[in-house]
Length: 581
Image 1 (cartoon, rainbow, N blue to C red):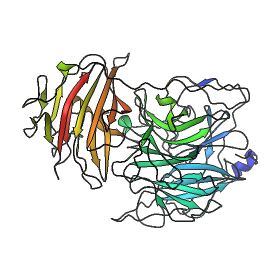
Image 2: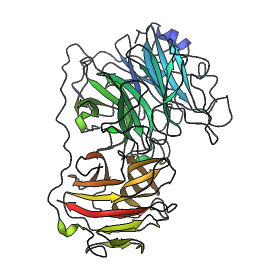
Image 3: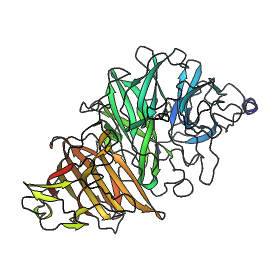
Image 4: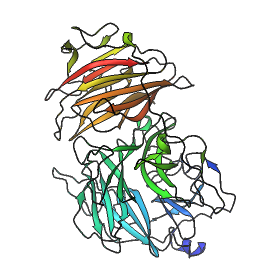
């Protein structure tokens, strides 16, 4: 960034709210997340740029910053000398310079900030414009000589509202800017309703200059961010519900391509455009305090180490004010490592909640290398008494039904269970659950599931898979599921919170017609149960994903489910249910 060229009095006259820079003091050797505290209790969708003055500036979504506040900031800005201690520095917009084409009630969301020569470009989402009735989101761009402004809107959308084929408007959210290897500029944008697109920009970065290209299927990703590395373009995208309070499973995945417009594929070569949608995990909830780990940017420190800047939710304090109001999403920073050509946070350990070595931001500061890679769960010996090969004509000893389904049968060495027109989510609780007691201690449970849910068509939300069941309103399920036109593996969680039921999910990689599913159980020192999701499409190579927790003192059972709809009906075929200890 450029040095701040105007005095504080001048900035105040221009309507830019500022805060005094922090005084010089020793750079920290370590830090603890969330780094946005105490400046901001919530700072969602962060983007960071380094200024010409040597400081870093973070821009966030327009929420209130502190618990107890109700006034939404207008793209708040934080300033830091070291990437881990931040102070509030003002808002990008005020009543004087807010985009005139945004309705008075429109949100200004998910900014992206870039330095371009002697000025700065700020891309942002406007959730509702004056151009059409209804919610017609668009992307705007503003320019300024310094990160603190004064910011001047370009006068209209750089990407305007896009009518949806069936009515309404596609979600034109979450802009991200890229300069490719040839110096051409690109803008990425989009969300679940419509997918993510990219479009070339003119040389000034203020106008589009080509035809948009879709780079991800709809109903899977949002929050794009793209980096160049070693001849590849890496597309980071966030998946699942950003804002489900204590059950937020928001996570970041990546695909890569040789060109900025794709096609992007994951580590296994699966496209991010296909119905059984690909994606390599970058960060997911890992069982500590942080859930909803998503919507990232990438910043590089003075030693050349990459860092993921993202927001997350403390599962013990998921809301800023009242329950089921604004989700409290502070900003976190963690080291971004590259393993075998793919990005992963803290070498697969993901979000930190304990002291970490700080980024290198000073001349005399020493950096630290990456830690050892996270270990994947490994099955132990088969616990035959807790397992079932479904070799008879009925489930073996140890099983019990919650609302028995007479259509579920055991024949031909498998449990065959047609999907029910029923569900567990919410208060109806009409779905059947086949469960058994879980063994004590650590274990891994595995099943091989075959189910034909087709591809591309809408069959919401047919699914089958494993379940962790502490009750109808306290469960987690790892399923092959149809979500609109996609087929995904979802690790969903429902629990009671503040007098209501909260449901959310994290998604994993692509399923196949036959998919192997695993849940790895461990017990924390607090007595809390932790369940980590794993999957495979060949039974040999496993990918491990996110973790849900159950409270100490609960006694969850483990089992199987098959529900979500019967039009058209699909039959889940479970070849076995195995427990390893």
